[in-house]
Each structure stands twice: as C-alpha cells, then as structure tokens.
Image 1 (cartoon, rainbow, N blue to C red):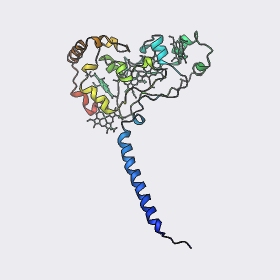
Image 2 (image 1 turned 45 degrees about the vertical axis):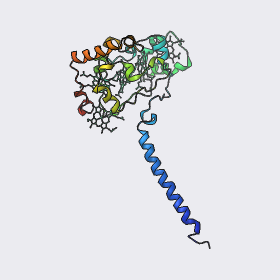
Image 3 (image 1 turned 180 degrees about the vertical axis):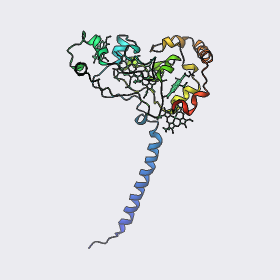
Image 4 (image 1 turned 60 degrees about the horizontal axis):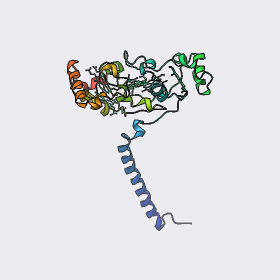
Length: 222
Ligand code: HEC
Ligand code: HEC
Ligand code: HEC
Ligand code: HEC
Ligand code: HEC
C-alpha cells in the first residue's frame, strides 16, 4: 500500500498553494484593468446584426442626415431606431431582391421590427436624454464617433460615469451651434480654435449652463 503522505506530497501541496495564490493575485490585476478594458466598455466592438447596415454607406456615401432615421433625437430622450418602412422608401426601388435585405422585407411583411443588436447603451439606473444634449449643441460625433466611417456600427466611447462627468464639469469646448450637431466632419473651428473656445464659453453663459450643477448625482440617477 502506498504511503498517504509521500515526501513529494508536501512539495506538491506548496506548489498548488502557490499557483492558487498567483491566480488570486492575477484575478485582482485582471479586475483592476478590467473596468477600463474594451471588454467592460465594449468600445470598438461590432455586433453581428440581422442586416449588415452600413452607416459608412448611407451617411458617408449617400449623405443621409441622422435625423432621417433617428427621428426622436431632437425631441425626446431616445434617438429611436428607424421603422422598417423608412428603409423601404429606398429599398422598394434599389437592391429590391438582394438576399442581404431579406430580413428587411420579412419585417415589413410581418410587422415585426428588425431585431437590431444595441451597441450604445447605459444601465437602466442611469438617466440619459438626447433632446437636451442636442438642444445645447453637443454633437453626435463627440459621443458616437465617426459613424460615417463605420461599415458596421461600434461603440466609440466607454459611457462610464467618469466620461459623462468629464464633459459635465467643462462642457464649453465641446459645444457648437445646435444646427451643426449632426455634421460628422465639422471642422470650421479646427481652423479657428480661439473662436471655438469663445463660442463655447459664451454659449455656456448665454444659456445659463451651470457645470457645477451638472455633476449632482440626481442629474443622472433620478
Ligand atoms: C435614402 C435611401 C436609402 C434608405 C432610406 C436606406 N437605404 Fe440602404 N441603400 C441605399 C442605396 C442607394 C444602396 C446601394 C448603394 C450602392 O450600391 O452603392 C443601399 C444599400 C444597402 C445595403 C447593401 C449593403 C451596402 O451598404 O451597400 C443594405 C444592407 C442596406 N442598404 C440596408 C438598409 C436598411 C436596413 C435601411 C433602413 C434602416 C436602409 N438601407 C435605408 C439607399 C437607402
Ligand atoms: C438610413 C438610416 C440611418 C441613418 C441616416 C443613420 N442611422 Fe444610425 N442606425 C440606423 C440603424 C438601422 C441602426 C441599427 C443598426 C446598427 O446598429 O447599425 C442604427 C444605429 C445607430 C446607433 C447605435 C444604436 C444602438 O444602441 O445600437 C448609433 C449611435 C447611430 N445609429 C448613430 C447615428 C448617427 C450619429 C447618424 C448620423 C451621422 C446616423 N446614425 C444615421 C439607421 C440610420
Ligand atoms: C452626450 C452624448 C450623446 C450625444 C451628443 C448623442 N448621443 Fe446618442 N446615445 C448616447 C447614450 C449615452 C446612449 C445610450 C442611451 C441609453 O441606453 O438609454 C445613446 C444612444 C443612441 C441611440 C440608440 C437608440 C436610442 O433610441 O437612443 C441612437 C440611435 C443614438 N444614440 C443616436 C444619436 C444621434 C443621431 C445623435 C446626434 C443627433 C446622438 N445620438 C447624440 C449619447 C449621446
Ligand atoms: C460632451 C459633453 C457631454 C457629455 C459627454 C455628456 N453630457 Fe450630459 N449634458 C451636457 C450638456 C452641455 C448639458 C446641458 C446642461 C444645461 O442645459 O444646463 C447636459 C445635460 C444633461 C442632462 C440634463 C440635466 C438637467 O438639466 O436636468 C442629463 C440627465 C445628462 N446630461 C446626462 C448625461 C449622461 C448620463 C451622460 C453620459 C452617458 C452625459 N450626460 C454625457 C454635456 C454632456
Ligand atoms: C453625468 C451623469 C452622472 C452623474 C452626475 C453621476 N453619475 Fe453615477 N453613473 C453614471 C453612469 C453613466 C453610470 C454607469 C457606469 C457604467 O455602466 O459603467 C453610473 C454608475 C454609478 C454607480 C454604479 C457603480 C459604478 O461605478 O459603475 C454608482 C454607485 C453611481 N453611479 C453613483 C453616483 C453618485 C454617488 C453620484 C454623485 C456624486 C453620481 N453617480 C453622479 C452617470 C452619472
């Protein structure tokens, strides 16, 4: 009968404990880096969509304005996703029989919306409102990136609390005339940075925007 405790068993036990210890330390490191990693924030991730809808093609190429499809963005908290008949205003004429558009035709026939996978989202306990931001001249591109260059849409910003607060504490540099918010390539102020800074500061004053108030917890957690 073999001995229960061999000479090497003790060594093996130590080795096992060491491995376990390293695993715990590793998990700590992992968790530390995790909150900022793209795994947690999903920045840059694309979703497998039922139809490979391309913003690059429709916005960058065809020049369709965001508000044509995201009709709620100026008037309500949600931007909204386009109902199928909006696609069909064009796709009853172009690419009519295309296999990639089969789910669009099925959706129109059945009345069931296309089941898009969401990429831009905050948790339910966070209150966000598009209309307020658009009305104040916060551009889409600041929060959603160059969607006109995205063949498949991905998240451009982490949407974590620190990111919201960074702007809320000093919104001036991000603001532009509200009628320019959907322009992706708006670069006038790149050539005149001093004008941009003045505009933002003037705007903040003229509209009584109070950065000090904008980091109250109750603004986003109601
Ligand atoms: C204002 C017109 C218009 C609207 C609205 C529109 N499309 Fe298109 N779409 C086009 C045109 C034009 C093409 C073909 C472009 C080409 O071949 O150069 C196209 C191409 C496509 C393609 C083929 C792949 C690609 O990007 O080339 C898909 C998929 C597509 N559209 C999906 C949609 C969906 C889904 C909607 C609704 C959310 C929609 N489209 C709304 C005009 C439109
Ligand atoms: C022709 C219609 C159309 C136009 C124009 C359009 N979009 Fe979209 N958008 C869609 C569709 C359809 C989806 C859902 C599929 C996807 O995520 O690509 C979407 C999704 C999005 C999403 C991700 C929403 C989520 O949580 O999944 C963002 C952000 C977005 N669009 C921003 C924009 C911006 C900014 C513009 C203007 C620069 C714009 N879109 C123009 C049709 C459009
Ligand atoms: C200040 C940042 C910010 C700006 C500016 C902004 N968005 Fe968003 N957007 C968000 C956040 C945050 C979400 C996720 C909201 C949620 O989960 O309720 C979102 C979600 C969306 C969605 C998902 C569907 C929905 O109903 O909300 C679309 C589409 C969208 N945005 C389009 C736009 C367009 C188009 C513009 C410009 C006209 C724009 N956004 C401007 C931050 C922004
Ligand atoms: C790039 C700048 C910017 C970013 C990023 C941003 N905001 Fe804002 N937010 C503003 C501005 C400007 C206002 C308007 C303030 C005003 O009118 O006094 C505002 C207002 C708001 C309001 C309404 C406040 C009120 O008056 O009750 C809410 C809610 C809000 N933001 C939530 C969010 C959340 C949640 C995020 C992150 C997901 C976010 N914001 C990201 C600039 C930004
Ligand atoms: C400008 C908007 C905004 C303000 C103001 C804000 N939060 Fe948040 N908060 C968020 C967002 C967005 C998230 C979601 C973060 C995520 O998904 O990673 C969040 C998440 C949280 C969470 C969940 C845990 C976490 O960190 O992810 C707690 C707790 C929290 N906030 C507490 C507070 C407190 C306390 C205050 C006031 C000192 C505050 N928040 C002010 C936007 C805000």
